[in-house]
Length: 262
Image (tube, rainbow, N blue to C red; front, side, top):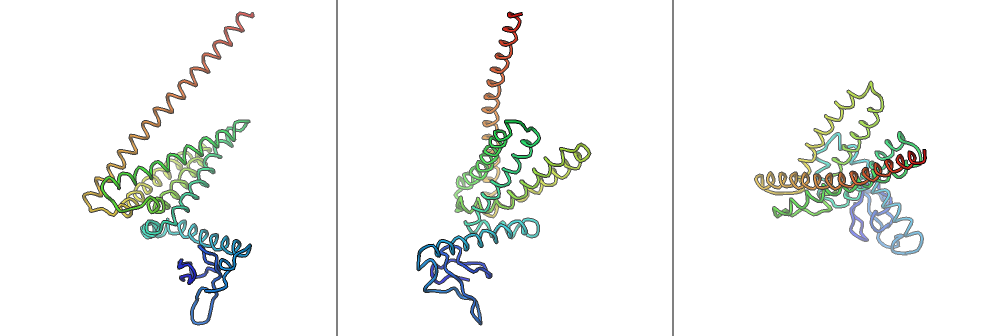
């Protein structure tokens, strides 16, 4: 259904245009969007409400479609998400919600006053790593003169993001019980393997390079990710080491002070 007012394509059952908020009237013999006194054209509060309803309707449909087809038609949804930049926002939303859930699981186990701090740091760390991986893959594709856009790349990674979130949450929940630890490892291995396959399919769909250049571009992306991750681990390790040394020095100082008092 193409809106006559702004030209945006909407889902068949949409009541409002997801872009401009114009009301879509279902008429006999077909469904055509109203062109004229739509909410967005008249302005005011009604236009804002209609636009929010249209956006929510479009977002809900995309999220439901991505979750369903990630398991039923992964190749098809990757291709669709890669061709429509709007799915990049859905991928970002899934990542943020998933990271928040993942961050809260260890925080619940830890408890105490540091719960929020631990959750927030882990949430931000996961978000940075995921964004970095997609950006580096995009950079590798561009090195080999791919025509893909960053928005298309983010959108196509939706199924990969969904799968990784589910696998990590399942693993963290199952490893809390020792009897399920082995099963959790098996499930994680399967999810990781399938996630890598989806990542390969995603890059192949969005890079749009010839076979030889595609392989080189993918290997370059993996190399860039490995290098950056090593640098991140080294920096974080150095920071953790300095913090640990400071804690040890303070502890030793307190012990020596206590001994002097005694």
